[in-house]
Image 1: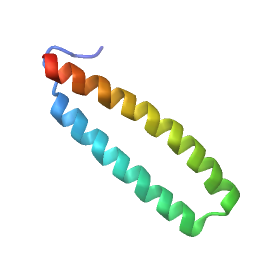
Image 2 (image 1 turned 30 degrees about the vertical axis):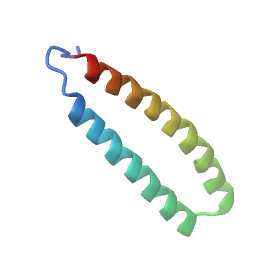
Image 3 (image 1 turned 45 degrees about the horizontal axis):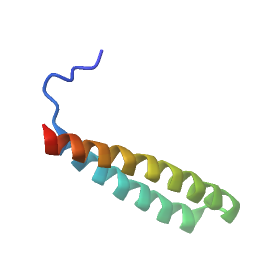
Length: 67
């Protein structure tokens, strides 16, 4: 069960920023070490995942404004 009685939007938004940085770092490492066919798939999935994260981030920022 999720305890939403005391949300910490700032911490969550900070972790989202860290996650984006880690994903970018991972992509760089993949580009340096993994065959291109696999890196192309990573890029497609990464973009979809980052779009989803940015939607969640936008939602949290709006909740934070009205909380």
